[in-house]
Length: 380
Ligand code: NAD
Ligand code: IPM
Ligand code: MN
Picture (tube, rainbow, N blue to C red):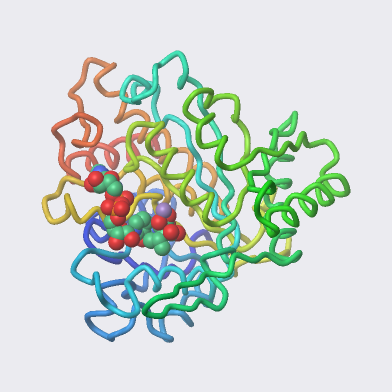
């Protein structure tokens, strides 16, 4: 019996708007396959602040480690600008509680028809296909912060165990390909002590455990530039610290033309090659414990108008099916459906695209087109 238990945290602004659309895709998959996903809806971010005066409650934190996967929208908005804690801290506390230390953020074109939407020349951006593996539970985001009237401090630290576990995910993902995908380890080892430790330990792990993988170092600042001038040179995997990964993954949104397209998966262990073997961070159905959310935020500037692009959230659902529920076929169906809808103009059909992609469709129209394709592909 496929499926499992989900905790669904739609969050704020466009979060609930795109989460509800992605869940319609899940409904269709349940109907077609007999899989059953138990769904528990709760609050995180500003929505939780309003009701509980906290960005996430202990009860929700506890539930996050009892389910098979968490499906997350986005948290934050200007109306909670001065609140303590802020809405975003709810998400950070869930990531830490779940110990989902490897945040996978793929950057590629969901459809070839989008290449001309990129601000980068087609001959430079065409074929771009890399995945950022962002350390997700440490670095400057966590540790003992100090916030005073005239002084603020975020200790930026990494321990061996934190580095080893995330670079092992990069190694394991690289080895799922033949030949193995190349890996870039991205840091600021020319300046930061924690980066020098990161670099040394990363090479130790790759030499010992993944000798067949081509691992290279790249400084984070020059990578930010090279991703614009030579993006395809980094096709493969980029493993990096929490802060660098956050910034570089928004840059991915710039490269592909819209942040609204990009999904992410935050995993508590390496993805299983073939499902059910026991291992680090496994859930009750033999998948990986994970939280799935788009790269984009709550987009308060467009919320409440039905304008948000649902693709990032829908593709996050596909990643959830793949990594947490071993439903690779259904994940591919969802990805193909998205590509097909984005290509619809090429087929002589109507252009079904949201405003961020230069189209006139709303969230619902784009989502319905994706749902139709998913239904069709599952029947075929
Ligand atoms: P944002 O990602 O919300 O928006 C940046 C720009 O991209 C905006 O112009 C927005 O309209 C556009 N955009 C984003 N998603 C889109 C979509 N699906 N369809 C169409 N356009 C889309 O970043 P921001 O404006 O800097 O942040 C807004 C709030 O979201 C802040 O409170 C921030 O902290 C929060 N945030 C939350 C998450 C999360 O919960 N994972 C991630 C990033 C930002
Ligand atoms: C993201 C967001 C979050 C982060 C914020 C909202 C805490 O920007 O998921 O990329 O910085 O990790
Ligand atoms: Mn971010």
